[in-house]
Amino acid sequence: MSVSAEDVRKIASLARIAVTEDQVASMVPELNNILGWIEQLGEVNTDGVEPLAAVIPNTLRLRDDVVTDGNVRDKVLANAPQAEHGFFAVPKVIE
Amino acid sequence: MSEITDLGVAAIRDGFRDGDFSAVEVAEAFNANVAAAKQLNAFIVETPEHALAAADAADQERAGGSVRPLSGVPLGIKDLFCTDGVQTTAASHILEGFVPAYESTVSERLFLAGAGMLGKLNMDQFAMGSSNETSAFGNVLSPWRRNDGGNAALTPGGSSGGSASAVAARLAPGVTGTDTGGSIRQPAAFTGISGIKPTYGRCSRWGIVAFASSLDQAGPMARDARDCAILLEAMSGFDPKDSTSLDVPVPAWEDNLSSSLKGKRVGVPKEYRVDGMPAEIEKLWERGIDMMRDAGAEIVEVSLPHTKYALPTYYIIAPAEASSNLARYDGVRYGLRDLPDGANLQEMYAATRADGFGAEVRRRILIGTYVLSAGFYDAYYTKAQKVRALIARDFEQAWNACDLLLTPTAPSAAFALGEKNADPIAMYLNDVFTVPSSLAGLPAMSVPGGLDSAGLPLGLQIIGKPLDEQSVLNAGLAIEERAGFTARAGRWW
Image (cartoon, rainbow over all chains, first blue to last red; front, side, top):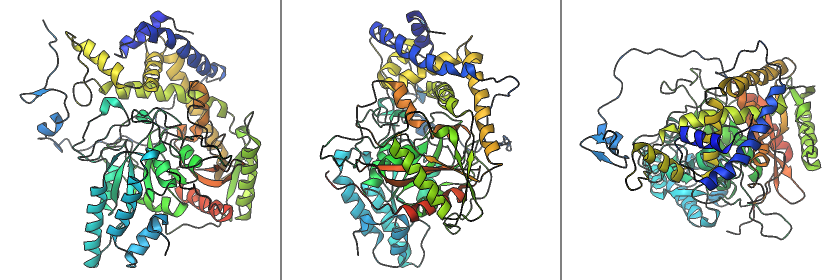
Protein backbone atom coordinates (compact mmCIF):
# COMPACT_ATOMS: atom_id res chain seq x y z
CA MET A 1 0.00 0.00 0.00
CA SER A 2 1.24 3.48 -0.70
CA VAL A 3 -0.11 6.94 -0.08
CA SER A 4 -0.77 9.70 -2.61
CA ALA A 5 -0.75 13.46 -2.10
CA GLU A 6 -4.52 13.25 -1.73
CA ASP A 7 -4.14 10.61 1.02
CA VAL A 8 -1.62 12.77 2.87
CA ARG A 9 -4.02 15.74 2.78
CA LYS A 10 -6.77 13.51 4.12
CA ILE A 11 -4.61 12.05 6.92
CA ALA A 12 -3.43 15.53 7.88
CA SER A 13 -7.00 16.72 8.00
CA LEU A 14 -8.02 13.77 10.18
CA ALA A 15 -5.07 14.57 12.47
CA ARG A 16 -6.02 18.28 12.49
CA ILE A 17 -2.60 19.37 11.30
CA ALA A 18 -2.45 22.10 8.67
CA VAL A 19 -0.08 21.24 5.81
CA THR A 20 1.22 23.34 2.95
CA GLU A 21 1.49 21.91 -0.56
CA ASP A 22 5.27 21.85 -0.21
CA GLN A 23 4.95 19.80 2.96
CA VAL A 24 2.53 17.41 1.25
CA ALA A 25 4.99 16.94 -1.59
CA SER A 26 7.84 16.04 0.76
CA MET A 27 5.70 13.90 3.03
CA VAL A 28 4.46 11.57 0.26
CA PRO A 29 7.85 9.86 -0.32
CA GLU A 30 8.74 10.11 3.38
CA LEU A 31 5.59 8.32 4.53
CA ASN A 32 5.79 5.79 1.71
CA ASN A 33 9.34 4.98 2.70
CA ILE A 34 8.29 4.29 6.28
CA LEU A 35 5.12 2.43 5.30
CA GLY A 36 7.07 0.28 2.84
CA TRP A 37 9.47 -0.61 5.63
CA ILE A 38 6.78 -1.56 8.15
CA GLU A 39 4.98 -3.68 5.58
CA GLN A 40 7.57 -6.43 6.10
CA LEU A 41 5.26 -7.57 8.91
CA GLY A 42 3.20 -9.15 6.15
CA GLU A 43 5.82 -11.94 6.05
CA VAL A 44 4.94 -13.06 9.58
CA ASN A 45 2.37 -15.82 9.94
CA THR A 46 -0.02 -14.61 12.63
CA ASP A 47 -2.85 -17.07 12.03
CA GLY A 48 -4.58 -17.84 15.30
CA VAL A 49 -2.52 -15.30 17.27
CA GLU A 50 -4.48 -13.03 19.63
CA PRO A 51 -3.44 -9.36 19.38
CA LEU A 52 -1.48 -8.28 22.46
CA ALA A 53 -2.84 -5.17 24.13
CA ALA A 54 -1.65 -5.52 27.76
CA VAL A 55 1.95 -6.58 27.89
CA ILE A 56 2.20 -7.49 31.58
CA PRO A 57 -0.88 -9.39 32.79
CA ASN A 58 -2.90 -7.06 34.96
CA THR A 59 -6.55 -6.80 35.87
CA LEU A 60 -8.32 -3.49 35.58
CA ARG A 61 -9.44 -2.45 39.02
CA LEU A 62 -12.77 -1.13 40.20
CA ARG A 63 -12.98 1.43 42.95
CA ASP A 64 -15.83 2.74 45.03
CA ASP A 65 -17.95 5.20 43.12
CA VAL A 66 -17.15 8.22 45.25
CA VAL A 67 -15.82 11.69 44.51
CA THR A 68 -12.04 11.73 45.01
CA ASP A 69 -11.14 14.97 43.32
CA GLY A 70 -12.66 18.25 42.24
CA ASN A 71 -13.29 21.88 43.16
CA VAL A 72 -10.18 22.91 41.26
CA ARG A 73 -11.79 24.92 38.46
CA ASP A 74 -9.31 27.74 38.60
CA LYS A 75 -6.37 25.33 38.56
CA VAL A 76 -7.84 23.57 35.54
CA LEU A 77 -8.27 26.87 33.72
CA ALA A 78 -4.93 28.32 34.81
CA ASN A 79 -3.08 27.18 31.66
CA ALA A 80 -5.84 27.90 29.15
CA PRO A 81 -4.81 30.22 26.31
CA GLN A 82 -8.20 31.91 26.78
CA ALA A 83 -10.55 31.42 29.74
CA GLU A 84 -13.64 33.55 30.41
CA HIS A 85 -16.24 33.43 33.18
CA GLY A 86 -14.92 30.10 34.43
CA PHE A 87 -14.96 28.44 31.01
CA PHE A 88 -12.52 27.61 28.22
CA ALA A 89 -13.16 30.07 25.41
CA VAL A 90 -12.94 29.13 21.73
CA PRO A 91 -13.75 30.88 18.46
CA LYS A 92 -17.43 30.99 17.58
CA VAL A 93 -18.59 27.51 16.50
CA ILE A 94 -22.21 28.26 15.48
CA GLU A 95 -22.86 31.28 13.28
CA MET B 1 38.02 14.44 49.84
CA SER B 2 37.24 14.57 46.16
CA GLU B 3 34.86 17.16 44.82
CA ILE B 4 31.26 16.68 45.92
CA THR B 5 30.07 16.63 42.32
CA ASP B 6 32.28 13.59 41.65
CA LEU B 7 30.13 11.62 44.09
CA GLY B 8 27.18 9.48 43.08
CA VAL B 9 23.80 9.08 44.75
CA ALA B 10 24.88 6.50 47.37
CA ALA B 11 28.04 8.40 48.30
CA ILE B 12 26.14 11.67 48.69
CA ARG B 13 23.40 10.05 50.73
CA ASP B 14 25.90 8.34 53.03
CA GLY B 15 28.28 11.29 53.28
CA PHE B 16 25.37 13.53 54.20
CA ARG B 17 24.23 11.08 56.89
CA ASP B 18 27.76 10.82 58.26
CA GLY B 19 28.05 14.59 58.49
CA ASP B 20 30.86 14.88 55.92
CA PHE B 21 29.00 17.78 54.30
CA SER B 22 25.66 19.54 54.45
CA ALA B 23 22.88 19.09 51.93
CA VAL B 24 23.10 22.77 51.08
CA GLU B 25 26.78 22.35 50.19
CA VAL B 26 25.82 19.51 47.86
CA ALA B 27 23.01 21.48 46.23
CA GLU B 28 25.23 24.53 45.78
CA ALA B 29 27.99 22.46 44.17
CA PHE B 30 25.64 20.88 41.63
CA ASN B 31 23.78 24.14 41.02
CA ALA B 32 27.14 25.68 40.15
CA ASN B 33 27.97 22.87 37.72
CA VAL B 34 24.55 23.22 36.07
CA ALA B 35 24.97 26.99 35.74
CA ALA B 36 28.43 26.55 34.18
CA ALA B 37 27.35 23.97 31.58
CA LYS B 38 24.97 25.97 29.40
CA GLN B 39 26.86 24.87 26.29
CA LEU B 40 25.62 21.33 26.79
CA ASN B 41 22.00 22.59 26.75
CA ALA B 42 21.04 19.70 29.03
CA PHE B 43 18.42 21.71 30.93
CA ILE B 44 15.35 23.52 29.65
CA VAL B 45 14.62 25.10 33.04
CA GLU B 46 17.04 25.34 35.94
CA THR B 47 15.55 25.25 39.44
CA PRO B 48 18.42 25.95 41.86
CA GLU B 49 15.93 27.28 44.41
CA HIS B 50 14.09 23.95 44.47
CA ALA B 51 17.32 22.04 45.10
CA LEU B 52 18.32 24.48 47.83
CA ALA B 53 14.93 24.37 49.56
CA ALA B 54 15.00 20.57 49.70
CA ALA B 55 18.60 20.69 50.92
CA ASP B 56 17.76 23.20 53.63
CA ALA B 57 14.88 20.98 54.80
CA ALA B 58 17.22 17.97 54.81
CA ASP B 59 19.81 19.82 56.88
CA GLN B 60 17.18 20.83 59.43
CA GLU B 61 15.81 17.30 59.63
CA ARG B 62 19.29 15.89 60.11
CA ALA B 63 19.86 18.37 62.95
CA GLY B 64 16.67 16.99 64.49
CA GLY B 65 17.99 13.46 64.13
CA SER B 66 16.03 12.19 61.14
CA VAL B 67 16.89 11.53 57.51
CA ARG B 68 14.86 10.27 54.58
CA PRO B 69 16.02 7.78 51.90
CA LEU B 70 17.24 10.50 49.50
CA SER B 71 17.95 13.34 51.93
CA GLY B 72 20.74 15.49 50.59
CA VAL B 73 20.53 14.17 47.02
CA PRO B 74 19.69 16.66 44.24
CA LEU B 75 18.33 15.20 41.00
CA GLY B 76 17.53 16.27 37.45
CA ILE B 77 14.00 15.59 36.21
CA LYS B 78 13.29 14.88 32.55
CA ASP B 79 10.93 17.48 31.12
CA LEU B 80 8.34 14.77 30.44
CA PHE B 81 7.42 14.68 34.16
CA CYS B 82 4.84 17.25 35.24
CA THR B 83 6.24 19.30 38.09
CA ASP B 84 3.99 21.43 40.25
CA GLY B 85 4.64 25.10 39.56
CA VAL B 86 7.58 24.45 37.19
CA GLN B 87 7.22 24.65 33.41
CA THR B 88 6.83 21.26 31.73
CA THR B 89 7.03 21.16 27.94
CA ALA B 90 8.05 17.67 26.77
CA ALA B 91 10.56 19.79 24.79
CA SER B 92 7.75 20.91 22.49
CA HIS B 93 6.76 24.41 21.44
CA ILE B 94 3.11 23.34 21.81
CA LEU B 95 3.52 23.14 25.61
CA GLU B 96 5.78 26.16 26.00
CA GLY B 97 4.70 28.06 29.09
CA PHE B 98 2.65 25.17 30.50
CA VAL B 99 2.98 25.19 34.29
CA PRO B 100 1.35 22.10 35.83
CA ALA B 101 -0.75 22.54 38.95
CA TYR B 102 0.15 19.03 40.05
CA GLU B 103 3.15 16.76 40.54
CA SER B 104 3.77 13.51 38.65
CA THR B 105 3.69 10.47 40.94
CA VAL B 106 7.31 9.59 40.25
CA SER B 107 8.72 13.05 40.96
CA GLU B 108 6.46 13.36 43.99
CA ARG B 109 7.84 10.09 45.37
CA LEU B 110 11.41 11.29 44.85
CA PHE B 111 10.72 14.61 46.56
CA LEU B 112 8.90 12.91 49.46
CA ALA B 113 11.99 10.74 49.83
CA GLY B 114 13.97 13.94 50.42
CA ALA B 115 15.45 14.64 46.97
CA GLY B 116 15.59 18.13 45.50
CA MET B 117 15.31 19.17 41.85
CA LEU B 118 18.14 20.84 39.94
CA GLY B 119 16.00 21.50 36.88
CA LYS B 120 14.00 20.09 33.99
CA LEU B 121 16.06 18.15 31.49
CA ASN B 122 16.03 18.63 27.75
CA MET B 123 14.94 15.69 25.60
CA ASP B 124 13.63 14.72 22.20
CA GLN B 125 10.28 16.35 21.60
CA PHE B 126 7.54 14.22 23.20
CA ALA B 127 10.30 11.59 23.65
CA MET B 128 10.28 10.94 19.90
CA GLY B 129 13.87 10.59 18.78
CA SER B 130 17.12 8.78 19.37
CA SER B 131 19.58 11.67 19.26
CA ASN B 132 17.98 14.59 21.12
CA GLU B 133 17.80 16.52 17.84
CA THR B 134 14.00 16.92 17.83
CA SER B 135 13.77 19.21 20.90
CA ALA B 136 12.16 22.59 20.32
CA PHE B 137 14.78 23.96 22.72
CA GLY B 138 17.84 22.96 20.72
CA ASN B 139 20.13 19.95 20.59
CA VAL B 140 21.73 18.58 23.72
CA LEU B 141 25.47 18.00 23.36
CA SER B 142 27.23 15.00 24.79
CA PRO B 143 30.13 15.90 27.06
CA TRP B 144 32.10 13.18 25.23
CA ARG B 145 34.30 13.86 22.23
CA ARG B 146 36.19 11.51 19.96
CA ASN B 147 39.89 11.14 20.67
CA ASP B 148 40.79 12.11 17.10
CA GLY B 149 41.46 15.69 18.18
CA GLY B 150 38.38 16.91 16.33
CA ASN B 151 35.63 18.83 18.01
CA ALA B 152 32.68 17.11 16.32
CA ALA B 153 29.61 17.64 18.48
CA LEU B 154 28.25 14.23 19.43
CA THR B 155 24.75 13.20 20.34
CA PRO B 156 24.08 12.12 23.93
CA GLY B 157 21.44 9.78 22.46
CA GLY B 158 17.75 10.11 22.98
CA SER B 159 15.15 10.63 23.98
CA SER B 160 16.55 11.11 27.50
CA GLY B 161 19.54 13.03 26.09
CA GLY B 162 19.57 15.87 28.62
CA SER B 163 19.35 13.30 31.41
CA ALA B 164 22.33 11.36 30.05
CA SER B 165 24.44 14.42 29.38
CA ALA B 166 23.75 15.82 32.86
CA VAL B 167 24.89 12.66 34.66
CA ALA B 168 27.93 12.15 32.42
CA ALA B 169 29.02 15.78 32.86
CA ARG B 170 28.53 15.66 36.65
CA LEU B 171 25.70 18.18 36.59
CA ALA B 172 23.55 15.77 38.62
CA PRO B 173 24.35 12.56 40.50
CA GLY B 174 21.16 10.95 39.23
CA VAL B 175 18.19 11.80 37.03
CA THR B 176 14.86 10.49 35.85
CA GLY B 177 14.44 9.21 32.33
CA THR B 178 11.62 7.56 30.45
CA ASP B 179 11.89 4.67 28.05
CA THR B 180 9.39 3.84 25.31
CA GLY B 181 11.68 1.97 22.91
CA GLY B 182 15.14 2.52 24.42
CA SER B 183 15.11 6.14 25.58
CA ILE B 184 16.84 5.38 28.88
CA ARG B 185 19.21 2.64 27.74
CA GLN B 186 20.57 4.04 24.45
CA PRO B 187 21.53 7.47 25.89
CA ALA B 188 23.03 5.74 28.95
CA ALA B 189 25.18 3.64 26.60
CA PHE B 190 26.23 6.67 24.52
CA THR B 191 27.40 8.62 27.58
CA GLY B 192 29.04 5.90 29.68
CA ILE B 193 26.47 5.81 32.48
CA SER B 194 23.91 3.28 33.77
CA GLY B 195 20.15 3.32 33.33
CA ILE B 196 17.34 0.89 33.96
CA LYS B 197 13.87 0.61 32.51
CA PRO B 198 11.85 -1.44 35.00
CA THR B 199 9.03 -3.86 34.21
CA TYR B 200 6.09 -2.10 32.58
CA GLY B 201 3.81 -1.01 35.44
CA ARG B 202 6.50 -0.65 38.15
CA CYS B 203 6.59 3.14 37.95
CA SER B 204 3.37 5.08 37.75
CA ARG B 205 2.79 6.90 34.48
CA TRP B 206 0.54 9.44 36.20
CA GLY B 207 1.70 12.96 35.41
CA ILE B 208 4.18 11.85 32.74
CA VAL B 209 3.35 13.41 29.38
CA ALA B 210 2.07 10.42 27.41
CA PHE B 211 3.77 9.22 24.21
CA ALA B 212 2.84 5.53 23.71
CA SER B 213 0.94 4.41 26.78
CA SER B 214 1.43 0.64 26.40
CA LEU B 215 5.22 1.15 26.25
CA ASP B 216 6.11 4.23 28.32
CA GLN B 217 8.02 3.51 31.53
CA ALA B 218 9.99 5.78 33.83
CA GLY B 219 13.34 4.75 35.23
CA PRO B 220 16.51 6.17 36.76
CA MET B 221 19.82 7.02 35.10
CA ALA B 222 22.90 7.36 37.26
CA ARG B 223 26.55 6.49 37.49
CA ASP B 224 26.29 2.87 38.62
CA ALA B 225 24.03 -0.06 39.45
CA ARG B 226 23.74 0.77 43.15
CA ASP B 227 22.64 4.34 42.43
CA CYS B 228 20.07 3.02 39.95
CA ALA B 229 18.76 0.57 42.57
CA ILE B 230 18.39 3.34 45.16
CA LEU B 231 16.54 5.67 42.80
CA LEU B 232 14.34 2.95 41.31
CA GLU B 233 13.23 1.91 44.80
CA ALA B 234 12.11 5.47 45.49
CA MET B 235 10.37 5.85 42.11
CA SER B 236 8.48 2.53 42.05
CA GLY B 237 5.26 1.45 43.69
CA PHE B 238 1.54 1.00 43.19
CA ASP B 239 -0.44 4.08 42.21
CA PRO B 240 -4.24 3.92 41.98
CA LYS B 241 -4.09 6.90 39.60
CA ASP B 242 -2.50 4.78 36.83
CA SER B 243 -4.74 1.92 35.65
CA THR B 244 -1.70 -0.05 34.44
CA SER B 245 0.25 0.37 37.69
CA LEU B 246 1.21 -3.00 39.20
CA ASP B 247 -0.05 -3.62 42.71
CA VAL B 248 3.04 -5.49 43.89
CA PRO B 249 5.53 -4.74 46.68
CA VAL B 250 8.73 -2.86 45.85
CA PRO B 251 11.69 -5.12 46.69
CA ALA B 252 14.73 -3.89 48.64
CA TRP B 253 16.85 -3.82 45.50
CA GLU B 254 19.79 -2.02 47.05
CA ASP B 255 20.03 -4.28 50.12
CA ASN B 256 19.90 -7.37 47.93
CA LEU B 257 22.54 -6.30 45.43
CA SER B 258 25.02 -9.10 44.76
CA SER B 259 27.46 -9.46 41.91
CA SER B 260 27.59 -13.24 42.19
CA LEU B 261 25.71 -14.83 39.31
CA LYS B 262 26.18 -18.40 40.53
CA GLY B 263 23.29 -20.55 39.43
CA LYS B 264 22.13 -17.99 36.85
CA ARG B 265 21.88 -18.88 33.19
CA VAL B 266 22.60 -15.96 30.86
CA GLY B 267 21.17 -16.24 27.38
CA VAL B 268 22.87 -14.83 24.30
CA PRO B 269 20.24 -14.32 21.58
CA LYS B 270 21.69 -15.29 18.22
CA GLU B 271 19.33 -13.00 16.27
CA TYR B 272 21.02 -9.97 17.82
CA ARG B 273 24.11 -10.65 15.70
CA VAL B 274 22.73 -8.31 13.07
CA ASP B 275 24.24 -7.79 9.64
CA GLY B 276 26.88 -5.11 9.56
CA MET B 277 27.39 -5.02 13.31
CA PRO B 278 30.69 -3.20 13.94
CA ALA B 279 33.50 -5.48 15.08
CA GLU B 280 33.97 -3.36 18.18
CA ILE B 281 30.40 -4.01 19.28
CA GLU B 282 30.89 -7.71 18.65
CA LYS B 283 34.08 -7.63 20.74
CA LEU B 284 32.38 -5.77 23.56
CA TRP B 285 29.62 -8.36 23.59
CA GLU B 286 32.20 -11.18 23.81
CA ARG B 287 33.89 -9.40 26.71
CA GLY B 288 30.50 -9.06 28.42
CA ILE B 289 29.89 -12.79 28.02
CA ASP B 290 33.27 -13.50 29.61
CA MET B 291 32.42 -11.19 32.51
CA MET B 292 29.11 -13.01 33.09
CA ARG B 293 30.93 -16.34 33.07
CA ASP B 294 33.55 -14.98 35.45
CA ALA B 295 30.74 -13.92 37.82
CA GLY B 296 29.56 -17.51 37.95
CA ALA B 297 26.86 -17.56 35.30
CA GLU B 298 26.31 -20.33 32.80
CA ILE B 299 26.13 -19.02 29.21
CA VAL B 300 23.53 -20.45 26.84
CA GLU B 301 22.69 -19.53 23.26
CA VAL B 302 19.00 -18.77 22.80
CA SER B 303 16.79 -17.84 19.88
CA LEU B 304 14.32 -14.94 19.68
CA PRO B 305 13.08 -15.63 16.15
CA HIS B 306 10.86 -12.55 15.71
CA THR B 307 13.57 -10.02 16.64
CA LYS B 308 13.82 -8.51 13.14
CA TYR B 309 10.12 -7.62 13.21
CA ALA B 310 10.33 -5.69 16.49
CA LEU B 311 11.22 -2.31 14.94
CA PRO B 312 8.48 -2.27 12.28
CA THR B 313 6.00 -3.45 14.95
CA TYR B 314 7.12 -0.64 17.23
CA TYR B 315 6.82 1.92 14.44
CA ILE B 316 3.15 1.01 14.03
CA ILE B 317 2.16 0.71 17.68
CA ALA B 318 4.05 3.70 19.07
CA PRO B 319 2.86 6.24 16.43
CA ALA B 320 -0.70 4.85 16.68
CA GLU B 321 -0.80 5.41 20.41
CA ALA B 322 0.96 8.76 20.02
CA SER B 323 -1.56 10.03 17.47
CA SER B 324 -4.30 9.26 19.97
CA ASN B 325 -2.48 10.65 23.03
CA LEU B 326 -1.42 13.85 21.27
CA ALA B 327 -4.97 14.63 20.15
CA ARG B 328 -5.31 16.54 23.43
CA TYR B 329 -3.09 19.39 22.20
CA ASP B 330 -5.81 21.49 20.65
CA GLY B 331 -5.05 25.06 21.67
CA VAL B 332 -8.00 25.10 24.06
CA ARG B 333 -6.96 23.77 27.46
CA TYR B 334 -3.24 24.43 27.75
CA GLY B 335 -0.19 25.36 25.78
CA LEU B 336 0.00 27.13 22.47
CA ARG B 337 -2.96 28.57 20.56
CA ASP B 338 -2.50 29.74 17.00
CA LEU B 339 -5.61 31.58 15.86
CA PRO B 340 -5.19 33.04 12.38
CA ASP B 341 -7.42 36.03 11.54
CA GLY B 342 -10.98 34.93 11.00
CA ALA B 343 -10.19 31.26 11.68
CA ASN B 344 -12.92 28.97 12.95
CA LEU B 345 -12.44 26.29 15.60
CA GLN B 346 -11.29 23.56 13.20
CA GLU B 347 -8.81 25.92 11.56
CA MET B 348 -7.52 26.90 14.98
CA TYR B 349 -6.85 23.27 15.85
CA ALA B 350 -5.01 22.67 12.57
CA ALA B 351 -2.95 25.87 12.77
CA THR B 352 -2.05 25.30 16.43
CA ARG B 353 -0.91 21.74 15.83
CA ALA B 354 1.02 22.62 12.65
CA ASP B 355 2.82 25.40 14.47
CA GLY B 356 3.29 23.64 17.82
CA PHE B 357 4.53 20.17 16.87
CA GLY B 358 8.00 19.61 15.41
CA ALA B 359 8.60 17.72 12.16
CA GLU B 360 9.25 14.30 13.72
CA VAL B 361 6.18 14.57 15.95
CA ARG B 362 4.01 15.55 12.97
CA ARG B 363 5.46 12.65 10.98
CA ARG B 364 4.60 10.15 13.71
CA ILE B 365 1.12 11.56 14.25
CA LEU B 366 0.43 11.20 10.52
CA ILE B 367 1.73 7.62 10.45
CA GLY B 368 -0.33 6.80 13.52
CA THR B 369 -3.45 8.42 12.10
CA TYR B 370 -3.00 6.46 8.88
CA VAL B 371 -2.50 3.03 10.50
CA LEU B 372 -5.56 3.59 12.70
CA SER B 373 -7.79 4.92 9.92
CA ALA B 374 -10.82 3.05 8.59
CA GLY B 375 -9.79 0.34 6.15
CA PHE B 376 -6.17 0.10 7.36
CA TYR B 377 -6.63 -0.62 11.06
CA ASP B 378 -6.54 -4.42 10.75
CA ALA B 379 -3.79 -4.52 8.15
CA TYR B 380 -1.44 -2.40 10.27
CA TYR B 381 -2.47 -1.99 13.88
CA THR B 382 -4.08 -5.38 14.59
CA LYS B 383 -1.30 -7.08 12.65
CA ALA B 384 1.34 -5.28 14.71
CA GLN B 385 -0.37 -6.27 17.96
CA LYS B 386 -0.29 -9.90 16.81
CA VAL B 387 3.41 -9.73 15.97
CA ARG B 388 3.92 -8.08 19.35
CA ALA B 389 2.35 -11.16 20.94
CA LEU B 390 4.85 -13.34 19.05
CA ILE B 391 7.77 -11.16 20.18
CA ALA B 392 6.60 -11.47 23.80
CA ARG B 393 6.23 -15.23 23.33
CA ASP B 394 9.84 -15.45 22.06
CA PHE B 395 11.01 -14.07 25.40
CA GLU B 396 8.70 -16.36 27.41
CA GLN B 397 10.18 -19.34 25.60
CA ALA B 398 13.72 -18.09 26.13
CA TRP B 399 13.06 -17.99 29.89
CA ASN B 400 12.79 -21.80 29.80
CA ALA B 401 16.49 -21.88 28.97
CA CYS B 402 17.86 -18.83 30.78
CA ASP B 403 17.26 -16.26 33.55
CA LEU B 404 18.76 -13.18 31.90
CA LEU B 405 19.75 -12.03 28.42
CA LEU B 406 22.93 -10.18 27.53
CA THR B 407 23.17 -8.05 24.39
CA PRO B 408 24.83 -4.83 23.25
CA THR B 409 22.67 -1.77 24.03
CA ALA B 410 23.09 -0.01 20.69
CA PRO B 411 24.58 -0.95 17.31
CA SER B 412 27.21 1.81 17.49
CA ALA B 413 28.83 4.38 19.73
CA ALA B 414 27.45 7.93 19.80
CA PHE B 415 27.28 9.53 16.37
CA ALA B 416 27.74 13.15 15.40
CA LEU B 417 24.84 15.56 15.45
CA GLY B 418 23.28 15.78 12.01
CA GLU B 419 24.79 12.48 10.90
CA LYS B 420 21.57 10.46 10.85
CA ASN B 421 18.67 12.86 10.78
CA ALA B 422 18.20 12.91 7.02
CA ASP B 423 16.79 9.39 7.03
CA PRO B 424 14.16 8.58 9.67
CA ILE B 425 14.63 4.81 9.24
CA ALA B 426 18.40 5.00 9.76
CA MET B 427 17.64 6.82 13.02
CA TYR B 428 15.00 4.27 14.04
CA LEU B 429 17.55 1.44 13.57
CA ASN B 430 19.46 2.75 16.58
CA ASP B 431 16.87 1.12 18.79
CA VAL B 432 17.17 -2.34 17.23
CA PHE B 433 18.43 -3.96 20.47
CA THR B 434 16.25 -2.03 22.92
CA VAL B 435 12.82 -2.13 21.27
CA PRO B 436 12.07 -5.88 21.60
CA SER B 437 12.21 -5.86 25.42
CA SER B 438 10.08 -2.68 25.44
CA LEU B 439 7.43 -4.42 23.38
CA ALA B 440 7.49 -7.30 25.89
CA GLY B 441 7.41 -4.93 28.91
CA LEU B 442 10.54 -6.48 30.42
CA PRO B 443 13.05 -4.88 32.79
CA ALA B 444 16.25 -3.96 30.94
CA MET B 445 19.37 -2.05 31.85
CA SER B 446 22.38 -0.56 30.11
CA VAL B 447 25.74 -0.43 31.85
CA PRO B 448 29.06 0.85 30.47
CA GLY B 449 31.15 -1.99 29.05
CA GLY B 450 34.17 -0.21 27.64
CA LEU B 451 35.40 2.32 25.09
CA ASP B 452 35.66 2.03 21.33
CA SER B 453 38.78 2.95 19.37
CA ALA B 454 37.61 6.57 19.19
CA GLY B 455 37.48 6.69 22.98
CA LEU B 456 33.68 6.68 23.17
CA PRO B 457 31.64 4.61 25.64
CA LEU B 458 29.82 1.44 24.61
CA GLY B 459 27.02 -0.12 26.63
CA LEU B 460 25.94 -3.65 27.43
CA GLN B 461 22.27 -4.44 27.91
CA ILE B 462 20.84 -6.93 30.40
CA ILE B 463 17.23 -8.01 29.97
CA GLY B 464 15.35 -9.82 32.74
CA LYS B 465 12.12 -11.66 33.43
CA PRO B 466 9.06 -9.63 34.40
CA LEU B 467 9.50 -8.13 37.90
CA ASP B 468 13.05 -9.50 38.21
CA GLU B 469 14.83 -6.15 38.33
CA GLN B 470 17.01 -7.63 41.08
CA SER B 471 18.77 -10.06 38.75
CA VAL B 472 19.16 -7.31 36.14
CA LEU B 473 20.75 -4.96 38.66
CA ASN B 474 22.96 -7.76 40.00
CA ALA B 475 24.22 -8.60 36.52
CA GLY B 476 24.79 -4.88 35.95
CA LEU B 477 26.88 -4.77 39.11
CA ALA B 478 28.83 -7.87 38.00
CA ILE B 479 29.73 -6.17 34.71
CA GLU B 480 30.57 -2.94 36.48
CA GLU B 481 33.02 -4.69 38.85
CA ARG B 482 34.74 -6.43 35.97
CA ALA B 483 34.69 -3.76 33.26
CA GLY B 484 36.41 -1.27 35.55
CA PHE B 485 34.91 1.57 33.55
CA THR B 486 36.40 4.75 34.96
CA ALA B 487 36.66 6.86 31.82
CA ARG B 488 34.89 10.21 31.85
CA ALA B 489 34.50 13.07 29.47
CA GLY B 490 37.17 15.71 29.83
CA ARG B 491 35.72 19.09 30.63
CA TRP B 492 35.62 21.48 27.65
CA TRP B 493 32.31 23.23 28.30
